[in-house]
Length: 321
Image (tube, rainbow, N blue to C red; front, side):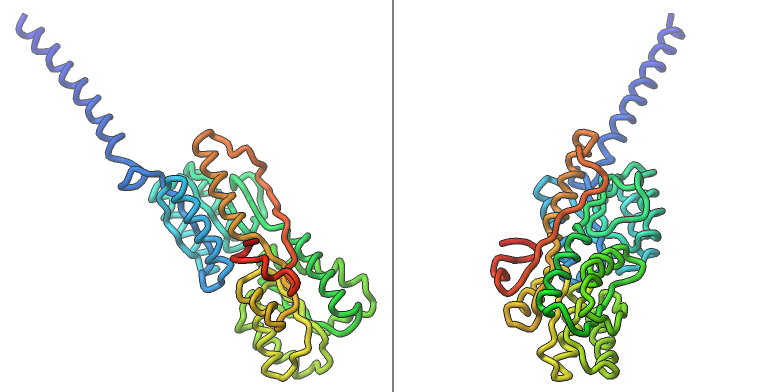
């Protein structure tokens, strides 16, 4: 009897040890030290107020919903973005909010996150693929560009020489905005584009490009820019050259440009609701994590608004007050 009892006791002890190990593993592996799930927020550099606003809005909404957050920036570098996605995977993130570093260059990183069981919710910029991201929530760039172009036509009186400053060629938004502009502007034979150059979304680059353009193009009546930082760079170059009467229209709705519109230095901008889109992405991530589905389509476009001197007081940080 004793040997049989000893064997039974050993089996019982072994079963208890297995059950205990299983419990310990489950308890010692929370997503974060606090036990909260982690949402990783990755955007371009925060020296651009647009990207800072979307990161801060996503961060605040995620914390409000009870998540831990990690806010990172890829600096516009797809390789750095890949490293940050790896970090999110290593940290066992529940979801990623991403303003990506390139429509083509970001596909593999988003797919890698999906393969690791982490859904990505893209904001501001799409990638050239479907099915990899859980959502791609962007401003309706074409609609916004058409709004801006229509105002530009009105301000120009349907005639005159103008310059277009475009964004990064690798960014789908740059091409969409330029197309939206030209689908309106090209209908007016009195409008003549005398220069079109990329300033890569940069204020300093836009300043330098505008300075160079002014040396060869003396008769410029207007500048239409693919974003507000380039509009600010163009405005600074024109002011330095004593060309204060040139019409300038931007795109983003940044606080600096809204202030410049109030001061009469820039005439209009197209506001894209960065904060709203970021909050929507976090809310949809929360819904998907809780129910298995966000209930929304992957591709979502949110309409933009035109900001002019007449309504500038109504707008705050990339949205209505």
